Amino acid sequence: MTKIILKDIDDLNTLEVYEANGGFSALKKVLKEMKADEVIEEVKKSGLRGRGGACFPTGLKWSFMPKVTDKPKFLCCNGDESEPGSFKDREIFERNPYQFLEGTLIACYAMGIKTAYIYIRGEYYRWINIIEECIKQLYKKGFIGKNIAGSSFSTDIYIHKGAGAYICGEESALMSSIEGQRGYPRVKPPFPAQFGLWGYPTTINNVETITNIPEIINRGSKWFASVGEPKHPGTLLFGISGHINKPGVYELETGTSLMTIINEYCGGVWKGKSLKAVIPGGSSVPPLTRDEALKAKMDSESLKEFNSAIGTAGIIVMDQDTDLLEVLTRITYFYFHESCGQCTPCREGCGWMLRILRRISEGKGRMSDLDLLISVADNIEGNTICALGDAAAWPVKWTIRKFRGEFESKIQKEEIELPNINKVHSIRHTDYYT
Amino acid sequence: MFSEAELIEIEKIKKRYESPQSSLLPVLWMIQEKKGWISKESMSYAAELLNIPYEYVLGVVSFYTMFFKKPKGKYHLQICTNVSCMLRGGYELYKYACKKLGINKEEITSDGMFSIEEVECLGSCATAPMMQVNNKEYFENLTFEKFDELIEKFKKEI
Image (cartoon, rainbow over all chains, first blue to last red; front, side, top):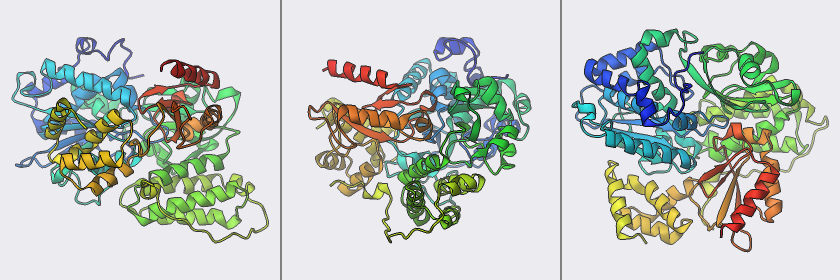
């Protein structure tokens, strides 16, 4: 299996070992031999797609940045990683931090950027310290700062520590957070490449995306494009959790079958039980039934067939005894908790869905509640500024559609009279000082 | 509140950003590090320091869950109960911890040692159930026994 990021080299997280294994050769090559446009062209040809969930072609995103401008330009590396089930970026910070930083520098060179911010979630105290130390080392070595490696190219890299908000993983909310505001997403257009941080051209890339860049430069776009599934090439860091024997992060080529990952790499479902459902890409993507999981290949295109998505490749495995109502209620609580509160459909809708699900859990559900849930989800989806609304709607909509029988069995036959209670407001609006 | 050296540090931080108010998050982190939580007085101080309205600071502090709006115990235990942890016993651990310490969410033990909070996914899904302490160190692959040991260890550390 090809490894691009989590290579089997001991102590790759130290600068000496990283350099001894070809580290910073891509940066030097770029600085010496390639023009900025050629780097972007190379990334375009590699077919690299963003690893943050939307799978947007990275080279194309880079090409949106204005070439000639007197304004400052910015790069943000998105290490907010708050999607439940996703824990790959911390693995990069821990095991190959310098490749990530080298990628950041190459990205800055390609887009003519002089300041990059690495946004890391505040909870990652340990990993923030690791990256901080690495950045210090690179300043000392002359790889960050003025006249990098003797060239005329200069860039500064800063860490911006988050403070606990899932929404800040959304690119425009991330920019709001760096600007020192509440993490509110912004309406697009204007897109960040035109009007980003402080109104200047900005590109936001996921940490895993950026970490792929040095290998694309070193080994060529042709090679990268040949790894894994042609439409979504490269490798993915699959984070496997839940009812599984060997949970962890596994770097595998895109297009690997889901059952290969579960059975061959992760030792199968735990306690000898059978599979009930799998969430293939973090809690916001629609789940797969057992039958779908048996057929699924893990890349963005193949999962569309099952109305699901690759997301952040955080695979959550659930065994035969899992209560899907409980799982869905927990997921919905998460989105209710994390909704920033700007858009009414998301702010109120998440609360409505949560209360209906909780009512069903308490044995007070009605058959019509299932369609009501789907209807609320449908009215959130696509009607919000950012994708958090969709992320909240998809699991509700698709878990109920795919496992309707299980939900129906939780509902008693006779109709129940319900008191007319309707509490509103998102948590982030009521959490004032008392 | 801040010493001379810390004020110099803040001036350095301000230079990283295009506008001075952008250093609000780092400043709030420094305050919390120093005081353990962020009081109204602290927010007024931050507002003055960065020349922004108090209400603006209040808006930011109330948005982010890691900024504590109330004092916490010496050891603030943050137990994840999100899906991946839930599937591997996150709730059981949380309930066990509450019972053992005799406190609920937002409460502090009478000796001021412990407080507890149920938190959202901390990116530790493969090593669930887990807990973070004081917004810092992770303790992963927890069992009731390991949790007991940790509590004993914390008690001895005073």
